[in-house]
Image (tube, rainbow, N blue to C red; front, side, top):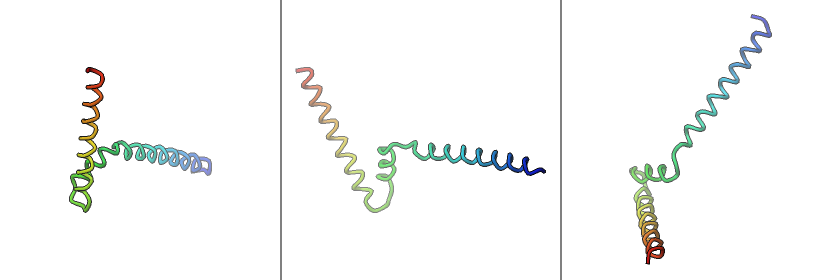
Length: 75
């Protein structure tokens, strides 16, 4: 194989590897922060109960705020 053929082959392999690495970065970041926290809350690691309690409290506060907002719109 000539030097030109080897250069083209190396360039093609570099392009393929670059394309694959970008695909993996996109795959890793598909979970939202809420989904990541939910997975963490369900685990057995230390602090997981605190994460679950925080999520429950935040959900409760959001639901309460939604009730207040709807009550103000429809007196």
